[in-house]
Amino acid sequence: MDAPLLVVSLYLGALVGGFAAVGVWETWSPARAARAPLRDRWRANLGLLAINHGFLPLVMPPSNAGAAWFASERGWGLLNAVAFPPGAAFVVTMVVLDAVRYGNHRLWHEVPLLWRLRRVHHSDVDYDLTVGLRFHPVEAIVANLVVIAAVVALGAPVWAVVASDIATITLGHFVHGNVRPSPSVDRAIRTMLVTPAMHSTHHSVERDEATTNYGAVLSVWDRAFGSYLERPRAGDAIVFGLADERDPARLGIVRLLGLPFAAPGRG
Image (cartoon, rainbow, N blue to C red):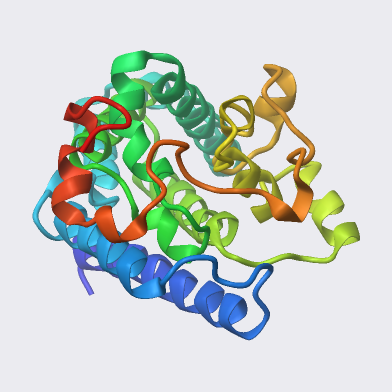
């Protein structure tokens, strides 16, 4: 198997395998009962997945590996200029790219123009595995271009970028899952990594709660920069989504694609 095909296969394995594993978990032992019809929500979320990953190559994760190869061929970036042992190169790549994802994610909430696009991801009135597929195409492209720029500036090895992306994709399925590890396991995991309970709090309808817990993989960034929240005020009765978009039947593909350009609370 040649290298590009191997890279694509690894990404697909993480996307499909991780999705299937968490899907079985949340079907067998859901943290919460469904609060909205699955048909409307899943049609929208899977439709956005098809648009973003089927028709827009820049949002496909292998583009990050391609950027790493491009930089390595030209000797660009820190890790191409300074020799690092393989283990250290992976750690640096993982930590730096995760920090970039944290900062990027936070900006989508704090900059009003970016928040208009981010509202699409937060408009789902329930929370399960498919929420992790719900991104406006413009956000998906811009967010991935930021990661690509970071990969080139860092000069990360291709293999380290692939490993980092696979870890991010796999944990992304986990944290968006309607699953609940035991309290003791959750506490242990969140000392280092983001958990479903942490990230579901970020999807609260309460704006002050939705501006917390931005981390993608490592929980350290939220703790370090003051955006960590232990749990929502409502506990298990947390309400998800946007205060002005409560009808999932109205939030179809066309509506979601136009949502950033409509005034909040208006059709």
